[in-house]
Image 1 (cartoon, helix red, strand yellow):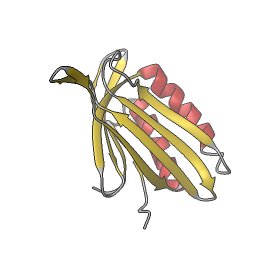
Image 2: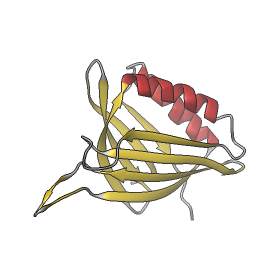
Image 3: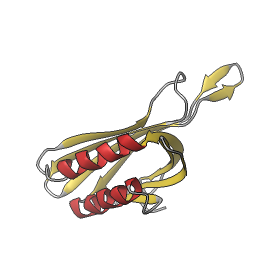
Image 4: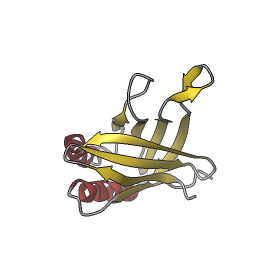
Length: 147
């Protein structure tokens, strides 16, 4: 799988969207599902349009779902950081749903590190706007290989 963060809308109603999120650094892949409110998605598009102009040391977090066994669904957190000119560093933490495992309740987790570029990020924000407007069901933050 090519490196990137792949989002696919798998279900929605009047309040929520359920997204399948596949994160790949080119070697490892983690897949989970999260619930996102339509309003949260709309606000995120506005925030990311503002953030994409902060190519000098800008930082922004994307958070879908919540971590921990007390929350339904999975969790996704991406820290976006323009640390160097022309490079977007992305740190992704993801967690699956909790389920019984013997006498414990556990969830799988992963942390992956990606690099992207401003033009690829612009494409992602545009696609997110189209998902918000119900014109498409997927979006991709394409990453570049680190080697």
